[in-house]
Image (cartoon, rainbow, N blue to C red):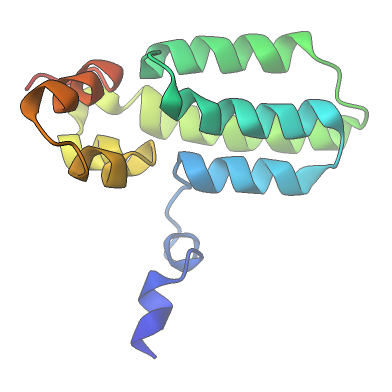
Length: 131
């Protein structure tokens, strides 16, 4: 019974919004179209890049605006999910603790695995935080 808490649906059951990993997974379920699958990968690949959260926002907005998704309802669903994430995670990043930022962007495990402070500074920059 307690394993339910670890269930990835738990935040949604509480009415909480998706983190970046959950967003990517949900977007990939909308359509098998290549542009949709590429968007899903773009979100996850951001975690390995040197781009900041603001650059993620700009790049994703540009991608969604410059690609053609076959069905309007798929486009609307994807843009709604992205917009909810963008408003909560990117626009609200300034008022978050570092742990909240790490959660929203799916970087907590990577941050914890850092071997030294220099490695952690990469995450602070990426997430617009001060050490």
